Image (cartoon, rainbow over all chains, first blue to last red; front, side):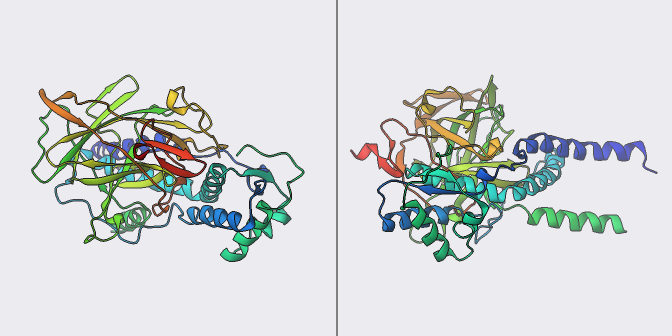
Length: 168
Length: 235
């Protein structure tokens, strides 16, 4: 049976979690079942295949940095970066918050990659077009990097799609 | 006996889930004088963030000298909730960090002892120098969810992609540089600031993870031709 003082002890921790949760909810995306947000390809008129391949390779490279990819080295906090004991609840609560955010982010990791790809191709002047899941699987969905880049570049530099362009 | 063990294991798991390892800015407190050591510099910056209306963390990467290892050893983040002042929706931060050339690399979520990279300005941003013994004024950072950009003139004519629904992970970010030296009261003592001298900085790999984007054009400093960064100062 917990005494009142125990409850008082864990209150700051709960406050820390709550504080982080309130912020973390901003990360949670709505469910995104629209196939056009998952299955799409790019096209730009009059772009040579070699240029398209270089563009796709660069944008594909940007998406390889998953949010959960750790930097190759880690850095400790400086020795003079001491935690204020009064902030400990926020530290541990913060860790829980970040873990929750991390879980939320993990659930949208693919969306982050797709958004990064879309941004990159948008700045390069490509339009985005919805495709079927089957067409996506044999292009953007290929696991082999070289095959994927070649397939996406071939479509990007090929005939103009007959469907309207999507919002980038 | 089990409870402490479970708590320890839980904390280890949680700690291992923090993907962005970074030093944190040593924030100044608004009610104490700012003391800048001989071998350190300091930055002053302001933020306006929409729609969260809460400060976000900046990610700065110090460019290594030839004798230094990877720039990933030099990642510095600021910490939310440690502003020296807040006036309406404007937050002001001051902090100390090693002097050197820094790249404004993006934004992160930093809370307590851990951090997650949010937006990477991998496709174009700025760099600037932080001088030893000086308070460098970075100016004002403006950030807004991509699908509902705030009405800052810096966001006019921006190319916008579709949001995937996580506003904080899909920011558009602009910078309004400080234009002249000024002074700010910290702990009741006036400190003279030095405006940051920005220079365009080209693409860099998304090594820290995060949604790829680029800093909005900065007049006279940073421009773009399609996806290519243009150094407007060099023209």
